[in-house]
Structure formats: structure tokens, C-alpha cells
Length: 305
Ligand code: RI2
Image (cartoon, rainbow, N blue to C red):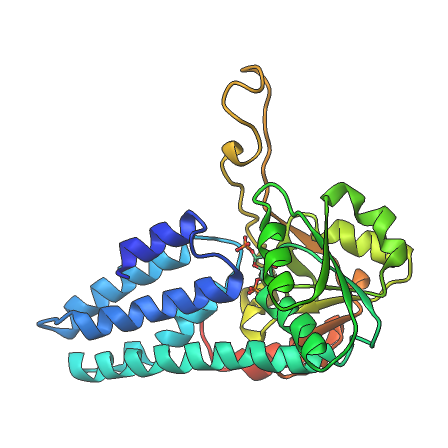
């Protein structure tokens, strides 16, 4: 897809999931480098900079999107010729997509070890990283049962229950309001991440922090599954993560409420580190307190304009 098509697909959530949108952005930049010919490096720089801005702004909360774009454009500013710049972007794009897919597989293997045979798991929204842990546990022969929340308003839980049922996993759909009462039956909560901040807080689908609260009250381990490119280097400088607010049409039907009723539709929330027992990354299982080290190892050399 070209840049406009990808931006439209991400904004409309036709392409969704923090990992998928990062890979889509990287692939689009690679496609642009393959398909377009520029007369000069400055003309190319202008197009690439526009593409970067458009892609990064398409969904502001998942830092994976920005990190995927930054990773694909790493070294671009130092390129002197269009030929070198095209080759670099194509290679970086392929490398990021490959590493990102491998990271999800590794997270599945590592995270599945936290799932005991006979475990009852709760998950929220539709996280490929969290679901990979659950699927890997199932594939290894563990008898597991999953409660998946509907995850209103977009209802990504419907995707999750169908995806897990297709694997032959015993899965039950619950409404978001049932989380606290169902938590009594749960052995471990596994959710994904859109952004992990340097102090170990996790930004994920709205409602995640309520699962964390209920898990904490019932002494149920709360585990976040996220690739290291979901760590936000900007948060080291105190930058706040933008919580995306989406169209009210996701919550109410036309004419359903009177004109003077307001609707507030934030689609992510932040779970403080104190409610998170572990973060499963492709680099291993870390405590929220170790995010800083992992971040410096991962991003130490990236500068931000
Ligand atoms: P993976 C999703 O956001 C959910 O919040 C999910 O937990 C997170 O991205 C990570 O997903 P949305 O795109 O990268 O549904 O683990 O708004 O697939």
C-alpha cells in the first residue's frame, strides 16, 4: 500500500494492533523506496519526511509505530545518494519486519512458561503478543481455559475468542463489567502493550488498568506481553503519552442520546508499574523496574529530533 492508503487503514483500524501497525508503516516506507525514483537526495528527503510524519501521526498512542518508522529510517540522514538511501530503507524495513515477527514468536515461547498446566487465563482486547503466549502454552499440551473480555467499544474481544477457538482453546467471552467477579476464577492475566514507559507503566487498551486493579485485589499475577520496540524512549525525557480519543460513533448510535449529552471515548489507559508483576519481552521476562536498562540497551544510540 502507498502512504495514504496505509495511513487511512491504520486510522480506520482496518490495520490494528501495535505490532501490526508498526510493521505496516515499515513495509510502506520500504515500498515507497522501491517504487519511487527521485532526481535528488533532497527531493527524496522531503518525501520521506512527509511520509514519516503522516505515518507516525496516524495513531498517536502506540509508540511501536514511531519506533518502527525510526528503525526503518535509521541512518537515512547520513546517506548522500538516492541509490544508497533507497537500499538502506529497503533493508531496514525488511530487518524491522523480520525482527518484529520473530519477537512475537520469542515472547510466545518465553511467556508460555508462566502459564501452568490447568491454568485459567484472562486477557483483554486482541494482543498478538499475549495471544502468542496462550497459543504456545496450548501447543505445548497444557490444558488451559481463557476468559477474554469483549473490550468495548471496538470489541476486539470478538477477534480474540474466534482466534483462540480456531486453535482449539477453551475460551469464554465476558463483558468488560464482569472482570472483577470472574477474576476469582483466574490464575494469571496476560495482556498486550501499545507503549511501555521508562518507569514501567504500560499503556494499553482502555480497561486494562481495571483488570490490573482487580488482579491486584485478588492476588492474581498481572503480566504484560510486549516487544521491546514498544518501549518509549521519549518517556525518559518525561514526555507524556497521548491517549487517543476516537469517534463517539464507536459508543453510541445516531439519535440514541439527546444533543446536549457529551461522550468521552479514550481508547487507551495507563497501568502503573506497581500493578504489573512482569513484562514478557523478546529479551526475556523483566520487572517493570528494569525497563530503563532494556531501553538504554535498545535505544541508547537513537537521537530524537
Ligand atoms: P499487539 C491494541 O490496540 C491493543 O491495545 C493491544 O493490546 C495492543 O494494541 C498490542 O497489540 P488497538 O490497535 O501488538 O486494538 O500485541 O487499538 O498485537
